[in-house]
Length: 399
Length: 203
Image (tube, rainbow over all chains, first blue to last red; front, side, top):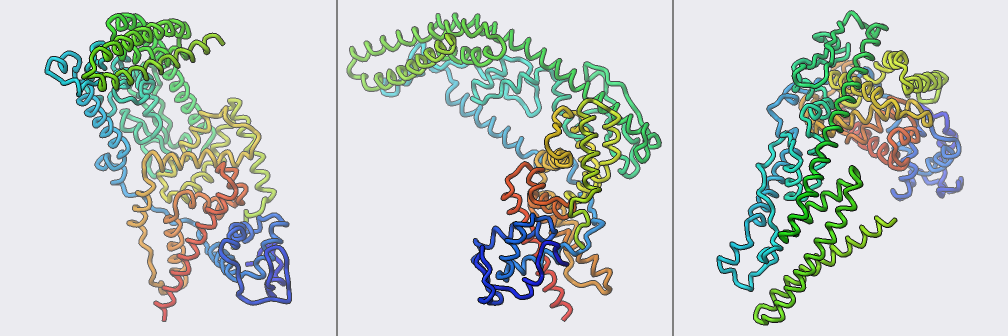
């Protein structure tokens, strides 16, 4: 096998070369280059062997080959590999057991790991931080040395009780529940969960991605190409009507209709594809509408509740709600942002007053001053953070 | 023999032009063009997928998904790049998605290890020996990592050069060249080992 781009006469009488210059008189058979010097040429050898290399590069490779025995050997082995007749390919059916449900945990080990992580996070956050600390800790005689930010009335991180942990595949339809989930796990899952607020849309959006999952989910869906041995029907799709809000007409196209891809068969495939696309589109529109409504109600509810939280000096909760409102409000309801800014100022004021009170308290009680100062430091940091955020929001609004 | 499609023949150019036309018409919503595209490219894609995963029913699914994706995201096609590259890209995305979603990269290897044991002992007659060698090489191909296998299949069977593969994969040329070099090194090493083994058995 010879390459159209290679000069065989040069190979017959190889010369020792520097990579860019041939010096015919100093040939040493088998002499080569260090591997790192050969690598760029080795990379070009596959295209060189199949004659697809540009002429200039091909000449450079020629020159290198004249003096490098290892590259010549590599080229020969590529030739001998490419000379082996590999067609038709021996095909192998993947064992049926691989697609069975028995090894679900093996195939979905990512999901399993995520569930485990969620459970651990839930345990850590709920058991460690979610306990009602405020009054109980003080009444149970917590010493001033153990004083933490959570022990100070009004500043305690009082998170509402955690909802039942979502199971795998469970659809969370209540945006408030979803928001709590995010507040506890600290993961930006809300959008994803709210997006799935319509279980029927979720079904379509998620499940239509994989034919196998599709088949598990719906009563009858077979999508097979005509080459599949003895298909039940060439392309049959029946979606149970009670599961979806839209009607997808059942279509049955027989194998005869479209043997060897006749016009009727191809047209039927196109029709079915279009139907599925339209169906997906209308489901997505429905999901968007549901999302928008849910967002609106969620934001409105939070905006109403934040001032009450500020009045009760439950700043941590107010901040969680506020951040959610700001995060979502920017994209969905810009009118919310102005109001959110006002609320943020109110929270900062409240926190600043708390801080000043705490500092005065620390000055008066020298015995617990160190721990209280530490708490005050945390509070000050939080207040500073809020102040910076306020400045940033103000700048954004003024632009 | 080397692949007869190695050089850009007039046939390849014609295919490229037809494919480009069909994809453009499909992008504007022409269903008849989509039908024609399906008719023309189906078997080529089927073979391509069989070479990647060596499983006819899987490749049926992958072909089906490729065409559904082509239609669903038909607006994404722009006439800037090569049409064949676009088609390969969509197809490769399906193959990668299959690898990823099903988490089968390792399972595929395991399946092949179980189902296609390499046979080192030379067969009695020449034809059987040739089949044996072919099986050995295919086994070695399935042992390659998916990125290396993709590059090798595109180079050896689809007749693409490294720059063309780089365009299809949207990768750096050096990355592609390096992957192909690694793939070929592994395959040639495996072939030499096999030949050495046969030589010893024969002696």
